[in-house]
Amino acid sequence: MQLINKQLNKIILLLSIVTLSVSCKSHRNELKIDLKDKKLTEIPNSVFENKNLTDLDLGANEIVIYPPLSVQVDENQNQISELPERISELTQLKKLILNSNKLTTLPYSIIKLENLEVLDLALNKDLNIINEIPKLNKLPKLRVLIIADTKLNSSDLNLIQETLNKNIKLIYTVEEYFDYLENDTN
Image (tube, rainbow, N blue to C red; front, top):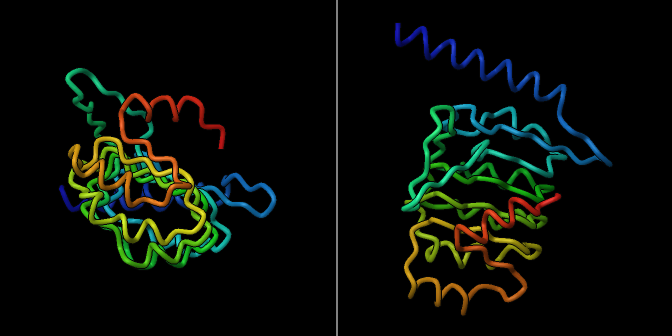
């Protein structure tokens, strides 16, 4: 029965990707793919076939935080624990949403995303962001970095603020994060 459920989930995912490919938002040769809340544990290979991909959303559909800062877990939420090195193939990517996954590190190949402007890593509680700063500083167009509720303490935050490229807007509190989500029109 469990094998049948896994196979059904794969079929549903493939159908949603096919549907997504047909219904992707395309504007001036820009392609946006939304794979929120698909129970993904990895990025589907079909995503990497889209060379004009500018926006990739692998985060949560809805983020709800209740005091004392506990996240309500959605059973459909993605559970991606590792980005593949292939992420570097998405050279047109401007916005990468990875919130609410299970990331612990970023691949070195992420530095090849030369057009990346917005990177949302929020709510990846085991992602030690301090270790990722050297990679992130190599992203020439990065302008917004969201690290709210990642593995971070106050001394790490001070070091990040000192070493991070000064042109990058750093969003590290939950309040700032929700303000950004509310006002983001990209």
